[in-house]
Length: 143
Image (tube, rainbow, N blue to C red; front, side):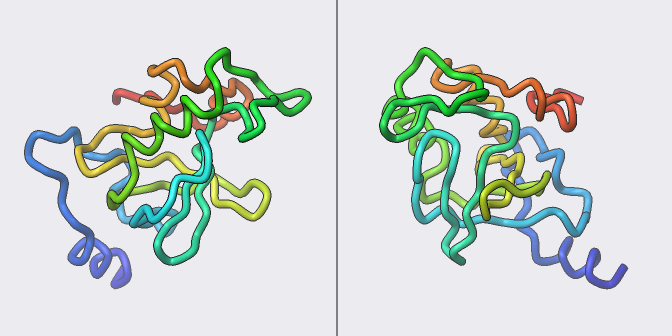
């Protein structure tokens, strides 16, 4: 309980015009990520070294391939990477961990404007929704 109160006192508040991030309930699965690098269209790195994989989102690999059995967007990996940079580079994200994938935390993240990055990437057309993971924990949730 003390940790949740302390987290609430230290966590930055959303801008008044931003939609409040769903992830801000005091859960131990919530964390902040100061984005230091965008690795590709669905992965970024935080200043503390953590690697974040966007939950329920699939982008092409850097070599423009799609892994067997994975959803494959029509857009290029370069386009997805550029879009993720536009939405997240240099920002402090508020994230909710949903699991792990290849030594990365999978998460649903909101940028400083309150925009859900995962949903925005799919809506941009540069990535596609990964239904299997979206069923477990939906993105683009407007509740």
